[in-house]
Image (cartoon, rainbow, N blue to C red; front, side):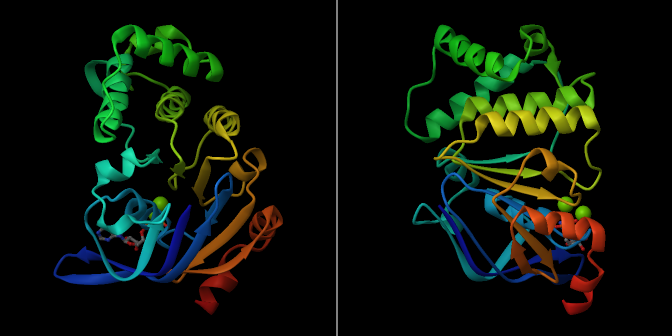
Length: 252
Ligand code: ADP
Ligand code: MG
Ligand code: MG
């Protein structure tokens, strides 16, 4: 599904450019859940951003293919239309826009990019109800302005709702370094687990092992020094929690 080979990427840092990813390889097959762990500043979010097509990064070497298409030649909207979803980076508040309205716009933008007809209001309501019921989201929340006054947990629930509606083929979840409280952790992991399927893959980016007690990944990778320096099963996450990242930083 996703195949990354020898990825080198830089960011503009004032006058100079800095290479963040230095030959990263990663392969994800349909239905797999991969976790990327690594020290703060390792380039985990950079990887997520590059997959989603966020600008500000310069890919200087290497390839990324998604279902045999050259992802690096696709615009961010085309990537979303092809089924790539990046969660948890921008919990923006949008006063005056009901969550429902936002979700409808997101879903119809994806359909338009795929050359599909926009959903009618009844069709959309049905899709929302299905997703909301599956995730235990109350209709009341969907009428409130997006993220305004939402608790951390409600913001996560909202993102998971969006993910359930868009039905991505590859969902990239970036936990961010602040981590999640227990409530949000439960919401995210239950949501992800309920959306796991043989056709859908997840790339779970996290600094902490805790999340992986709830979302048990098939593969765990350590990102350090701009590359995947070690891969293993769920037990690797436990090992990292006990031993930390120091040895990887020294080796990198
Ligand atoms: P992680 O998510 O693993 O903590 P990031 O991908 O956020 O790491 O960042 C990797 C490195 O790249 C950090 O040193 C960070 O300061 C730098 N970096 C990331 N994005 C930018 C940017 N837009 N401009 C300048 N430096 C950046
Ligand atoms: Mg960081
Ligand atoms: Mg990060």
